[in-house]
Amino acid sequence: MIISMGLTLVKSILKIFFRLKTGGVENIPGKGPYIIAPNHASYLDAFAVVSGMPSESFRDLYLLGIQKYFAGRFGKAFARLANVIPIDQEMYLNKALQMSSYVLRNGRSLLVFPEGGRSFDGQLMEFKKGVGILSLELNLPVIPVYIKGSFEALPRTAAWPRFREIKVFYGKPFHPSGMDISKKPAGIDSYQFFVNELRDRVKRLKD
Image (cartoon, rainbow, N blue to C red; front, top):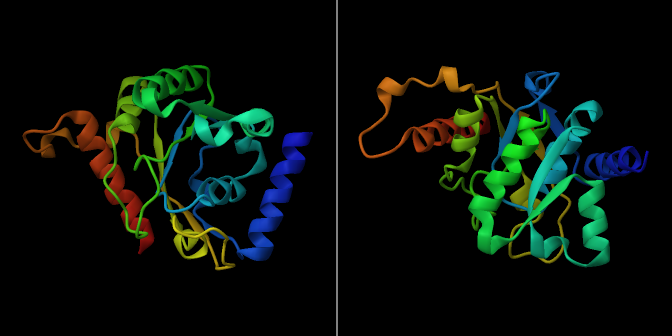
C-alpha cells in the first residue's frame, strides 16, 4: 500500500513538473526476471524509468544504489520501501554481482546503470561489464533504455532541478542468444562484447 502510494506520487511529480513521456513500454516483459539498463546522467533517472513502467512491473523490480546515499534512518527506510539494494562503493563490483545474482535467481528483476555513475556532460559513457556477466551467466534478457532530458533537468553540477521535459524510451529485450559472437573483436571477452552491443542499442534509442 505504501509502495503503491509512493510510486503514484513520484509518477505525478514527474508528469506534472517534468512532463514525463515514454515510448516502447510494450517492450517490457510481462514477467521477470530481466535486467533494465538505462543511461545515467541525473539523480532523476531511476525515478523516471520506474515512473514510465506499469505499476505491476515495479513490484518485482530492485535497484542498485550506493550505500552512502541511503544512510541514516530515513535513507534506510526509503531503501526498503523502494526496493533499493545499498552497495558499499569500496566493494562495489563483487557485492553488486552477488546481490544482483541473488535477486535475479529468485525471479525478481533488476535496474542497473551500466555506466557505473552519472555522466558529466550528458553524453553516454562506456559500459562496465557487470551487466554482461549477469545476463550471460544467468541467461537473462536486458532491456536497453534511453533517458532524454534528465541531464538538462538536473545535471551533476546542479543543486536544484530545472523543470525540463524528460522522455524515457524502452528498447526491445536483448537476449544473450541474440549476440553474434563471430563479430567479437580480439582482445575483449564475451561480457564486454555484450555490453558494447548493449550500449549501441541504448544509443540508437536516442535517435
